[in-house]
Length: 249
Ligand code: NDP
Image 1 (cartoon, protein in one colour):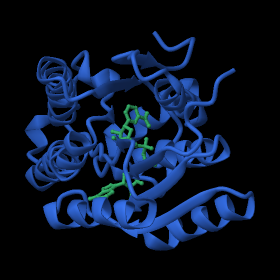
Image 2 (spheres, helix red, strand yellow):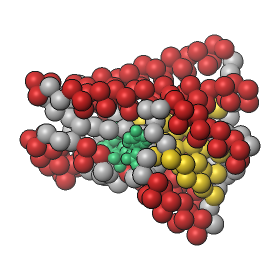
Image 3 (cartoon, helix red, strand yellow):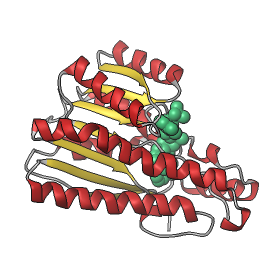
């Protein structure tokens, strides 16, 4: 099989655990040059060390996706280290679900800041580089919650529906403008990661944990999808992937 991943420079946000970490490990094994971003630098450093021990190329950069400056800094670091950027995987996210009536307004704001503004900040930071290069690939993690709505996920669903809409417009405008920026949006269902740790509502946490215990699959399965998108030849794109446990209704 062709390896179109080898030598590509890829920024991954939310690389310190779960889907981002699994993707980092897989892309490194396929020869990508990685810039890993998240807030927990200790976790990033451990992942980078393991990748390098296996002969891969990766660097860690502290990143808070809610800050435009922090996003600009990771883009500059990637260019300084590797000379160009081929793709950005906008994956950082939070899911502190609760009923709307619980009025956990601080958590609503956090989700908007990370899941929506985080994506916007990432695109704003990398877009000038992609336009100057006349190529780039934006991959984003939405969710099945970006396709449907479920009780207790009102704000989370809203943020993930946003990602879906924004990515679709980015795809269309990039085609119209001839910038050669490809997009791929991923809609995972239950994936076993640390995401449920962000839920502070006891009843919702219990329910979600029961669901994930029954159905959850490994984050490596989502990493496979990211690798599939990145491996496509330059004239081809798969814009949307829905992925989850085979037995989850
Ligand atoms: P994890 O909790 O394991 O990973 C979330 C990542 O986001 C961590 O690396 C975390 O790093 C990072 N992150 C959170 N806040 C920020 C911030 N302000 N700045 C930078 N990074 C941040 O969960 P997942 O791997 O599951 O989540 C990855 C994505 O997948 C999310 O967007 C999530 O919504 C989505 N998703 C997950 C599903 C699942 O079932 N697990 C299903 C559908 C979608 P740190 O705390 O170190 O900053």
